[in-house]
Length: 570
Image 1 (tube, rainbow, N blue to C red):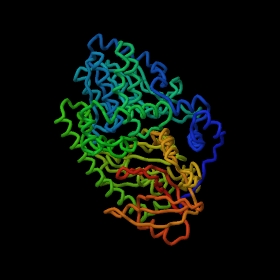
Image 2: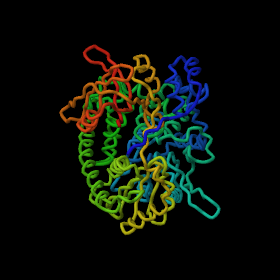
Image 3: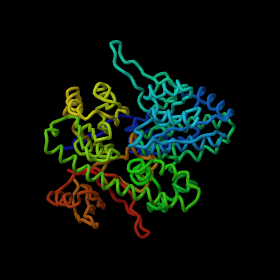
Image 4: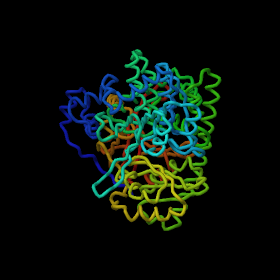
């Protein structure tokens, strides 16, 4: 059962509203997102690209730029090694375009999920040596590749790491011992001594910071950086970064440009998904466009997504966009099958008693393990790992809840794992099949999650009667966009609503339309998406209902009417 709680953060909402000419409700929403102080509120409401930090603040940036400048002048061969997810593809493309612009001799390699695995491996170093590569530049990987980068150094190569994952460490008697690869330069804002203020950047934004510094060094006009904003936005949303500070500004600016993008591949991907006449939001990136880009790295090769971004004519772009969209449809079917198998395993074994779920689906495609883990985590509100059978070992991905740092818990199980890496909220690993049960037991023995931690919470921003909603308030709420992780869509609530009418609509019977009246006599339309029959049965049996909701303006046949989108009910 969900626990409904009201955010109780305090401030003088009336004075904030007067100073910034916003409704006090909007001031409260901003405070609930931990934005305090005049400068920060002003940045939140009106921040622009000129407000993002200088790339030169990042540790090793001067070193990395100096190395690349020398390599460009020497015509040395540079190879970008990326990753097969949306952030890795965008990172690779950002570096490729930027380095070509400054005259570098550069190529790319995105590892194959099955054949190569994540990140740099020894055979990729050997291949680079055979291809007479002088410098390896990683993106969205590399921070944990100690032995592989050591091998590259022994072979005489220069290595620059650009990454955003957690800095590896091991626990010793004296505390944590940081483990860094022996690269010539490491760009990762999560390094403890890195002065860059934004620590929660995705890999593509770290790559963008490097290109920003290089453009400055090579006197490339600053306006040319604008083409990278939409790429940074796609990667930030797709890799589920917090939409705060610099990230929020880049996503806001990138989404503005995405509708009229000059990139043929992205334009065709938007068209084939029926979004050419829509306002493209973070939702569309996260749940429509992004999964298509991710699908190639899951079921085929991420080189297809990179080819889409590099497409030079509309015909090529249209074919690739169609292929990726079709792959995503296949991925959806496989995901649904895998999710049902995972639920069956939890419900019919003693897994259901675990606080941390470790689900082994040997026949599941390894590429969708992370998606399935996310779905299971949402269903049970428990940290979840989904493992699949790989060629030489089991592989898998995990998705976590706020109270559980997944990466830290994997460190405590490092002796059972072949390889691992990630963030507090998500991780990837490989493990010998014989160790899976030991891994499951260890995680649960170490787990300190309480029953309260495992109870899903619905955090209400403002208990607000529907009579307070106006079109102007809804337009002011739009100032807080883009919404996503770290800047969630506002949630309002009202109790004691009387149901005047309720009907299920839609071919799949997954939409309910209702007419509600509050105690003050205000009547308003509402819509609910989900198990519509169950919802209508519930509300029709009661004299009144409590709901959480989000207000919106419904445009239909030239009319604009206020309605609420119901999120939860009780």
